[in-house]
Length: 341
Image (cartoon, rainbow, N blue to C red; front, side, top):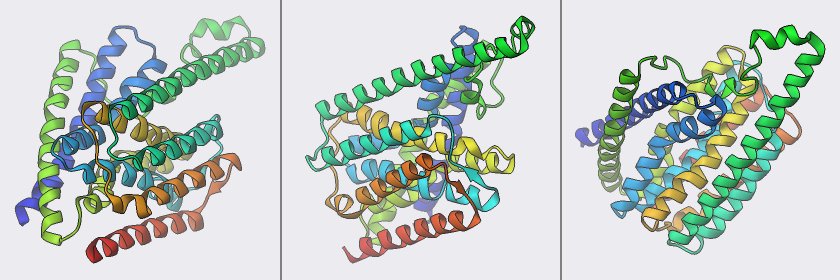
């Protein structure tokens, strides 16, 4: 039994490190190839930071552990809202008025509704996956166009207020896109080192997924709970640690305003990219217990996020405590229901 816990914890650690190394190596190669930061942020960084969830869900589905695949995504989305936004608010005020957050949050709510609808026609198959990936392509295209327009508008404002001298400094060359790479540190300058990073990441991800899935399924059997419960709690929380660490550090550095954008983007990618890619490769069975409670909690969290963004609410210690307590209550409820069943 001890080996199962070591396998689960070790697998999650390997997944997080491998995902981080893969992102750094990929960004290093992309920058050397002259790919704009905006494109890197919307594609490589977004997919790379979701790599642990993707590999976990894909491997789980291939091994007929659909409960872990679905539970991982649903649980991660819940944790992203209640915990990833709640804990940083206990450290410093977290504004929810980031530009474009309301529009993207409403899209996230719509995507969540579509995902729930698909879940009721289990298993989630090839055509469902293609539909989700089409929505992802639309989201990426719209984000790219919006960011480019914002960049051009900012350049015009800068040129009008500071004159041509400002443009000559190149300060605004990547205006509106640098934030996409703020969380990617220690990007290798050497192409060979970047390639080594990529290889290590590609090797580490499936290896970490193997130990995580093995440990999780054995623990679920020992505890007498379903795989969905493990996916919704332990694995979901583990794969959300990178987002949690990022938002906590942002709060400490007084950069909490970007937290809501990161959470919205992560949740959209979880539903569209991870489920979409996994469903294209192999059908995903949706456990009945997930449809009774968890998908509705996820929808409530999505609506809450849209509300926070629309009214530009600033999360303080009280609201942060309430959200963190709500997550603790949810986890307790999931385990209680899992033990009952």
